[in-house]
Length: 315
Image (cartoon, rainbow, N blue to C red; front, side, top):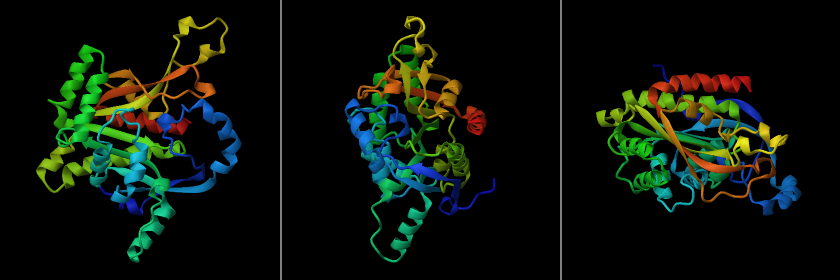
């Protein structure tokens, strides 16, 4: 399979005017505190700055730590867990995984480093997205993965589903990839298919290119496990007041559009309440934030990519 140029040499095609937002990921973008509404309206012109965004894909590196940690800060809701260790695992895996930044800023930073000057500390501001996949068996002894396993088993209420989850986390862990994709709200949707394409290409190449057979085998995933956020309607449609405008609202809203496709293709899934849910914005007042855990077979990934590409093309 032919390899493209290094990610550091690849610039994303999408170039558009984007509003820089304060650290909200897409999965958090539909909720906000009521107390902030008035002040945010008054200060919107000051806090938001329109910039010409030229995005590029890069290998993760240590200086991305704070930006990646910001994206993952609510990954396991409010549970105290080894988030630092989790970020370290993602950053250490440079052959499979991508961070998305503003291309020019990254190039300037690398130039400063080559001159011997102290690197810039602006990575937090420049990082717009992250995608990676970690082998649950290979990293199973790390505290962060143990914390993740404990958390997921704790929030799974259905006994039959919990058996399937436990099997994935333990017996089948060596062939399960924990797929993590987090983006800020201003990430351009037209880049989402390319982000997943980059990941799955790297997974495929890793099965051939990693230096040891053990590492090569660790990327031969049979299933992927995902932990994401959705918005679920608080009141069932049958309880809606007659002639209410709320009757047209969908039962579930997916902040990340690809999660709906993955949900449709999943072998099994379950939802659980998010304990740190904030007051919803006015347009989402009828919804509550929920966690969604999905198991997707590796054989379903090509279909997922086709559906995602078609969805983006239509929008």
